[in-house]
Image (cartoon, helix red, strand yellow):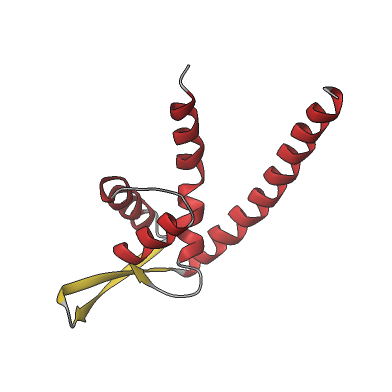
Length: 114
């Protein structure tokens, strides 16, 4: 089993949550979303993010608008819908519970190995 595959699956598992969180306070276009993920060491390529954004839009969690750019073609800005905001709140609660559970399990294992 290759560790890189497991690490990639872990990142994919939290990617939706991260994208929705990025859009929580303000709309953003793909390059901004990718930059935020990159800064957080979550390396994602455009080929991964576009289908995900489309899926989130089709699920009613995101909407988008076109905005003219001073440095090139118009940009598509994504933002959370009201449903998306509710969904993000639910994911945040689930994430908190999951973090606590994993912390409890991994700390327990560490203590047992001492």
